[in-house]
Length: 92
Image (cartoon, rainbow, N blue to C red; front, top):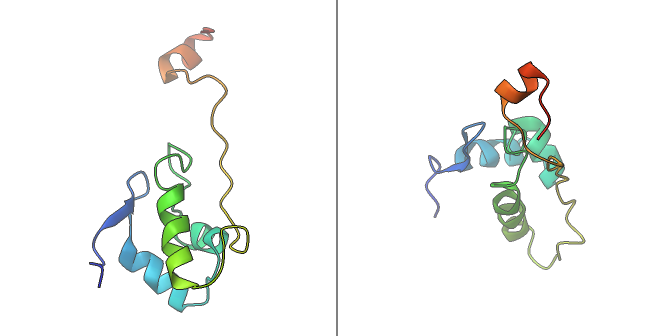
């Protein structure tokens, strides 16, 4: 039994308990869980938690592969810049 207070998404502070609640309310795919809980929508855009959420939902649906489960999309930045650089209009 997992502890429900474990944080899965640090950026949005989403816990396993919140994922479980969303799953019980009918959110059955990783994408639906993302939309309901905001896991994967924080500053890192899912680079940290995306695989954790996908693995968690994969364990709930035995016998299905990752291709059967709707995987989360992620959009990494082309080139990260600071807010200061953005404000000044600098390029890196």
